[in-house]
Image (cartoon, rainbow, N blue to C red):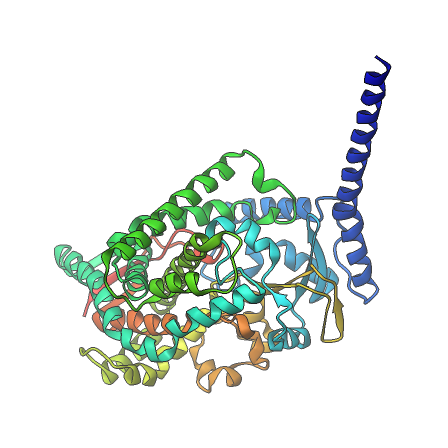
Length: 519
């Protein structure tokens, strides 16, 4: 009996020690370490809103977002391109108080807001492998992007870039003109049929889904050797998955939130499994076909076999993750940019006329070659101005994977850096007093002639992590916009409501509605 009591007391003691150890580790991770990091930053003169223990500034952020949403709902906003402060209204409030360079926290995640021109320049020029994608991206965005090229770091990212980059080089992109032309005309023919059925003018047409079909068909054919009909279910589920993940974007620093059995988390888990199975089905069909393919999918399959390391999820996850990356990025990038571009041209008829005249002069009704597209200077300027006013990303984020020194600032390991793209793209100090106006002429002499700090223009990211697919995206945009202009005149439909919102990208909340007339 005494032995049993002795063992019982021993187990209690061991349990108490284990519990105490866990509490100490949690305290170190959630309280002491974040406080130490903030103290190191404060010593360098960096301030910011005071955080609360465990939550950081999340409560303040959510309160501000809730208030802002009520204000926006109360009155329909006019068409203005000065909308960035409405997306993340807590940032301009902090900016007024702490300047263009300050720190804040989401949970125990410490973040530096960077809008100072000198630091932006230093960060965009950095080639250090230790300035990488935020580690929380793989956790929070894992269901959507996994360990694909958009979220990975270090040797894995270097390997992915090495094998995938050549698939999106200019020499291969040049050969995709005919493919993009065909995919676009399928949709535009449906618009023509509707115009004829409605007596020569369509008073209202919702273009967003049609543009997604064009870009989806292009990426399916160019990268996966199929068509949009076959990949439609994958695209649809990825869009729903993106919507679900965007709902928890401000909880990135709260440990364990993604494991809670909430309805949102259950939906994310279900969609992740379904997308995974659908992509593996496409891969299985490819392997069983016995045909020789030379496209993105085949490159990913071969890359998974030949790598000299084992990705955390194994070969299967290497394939699925990189396919999800190209599915998500390549389709949405083009479709959303094209939507905003057509909105701007619809509300600026003088530019619509100028670019249409250029397109008809350079290639008319024929299929243009790559050199013709390159000569369309006005068209390029309009696309650049669209991406300035409506960049896809709200912010580009990086993380110090090790202690770093950038622009004289010592950045502790684990600290995130946020550069707000919308803010940088419209800063009057960089772009002039007309920074919120649609003026494509500012790009007449290129990016360096458009603003005081070229590094402040980053529609496709910056540095070594710049988007690999930017050449394909620009080619698609030129062809899609050029074809719409050469076939139709258009204006904004009375149903159009201008309300940019932030999901994982900057999107039109109610879509783009146009009135179309066939030329």
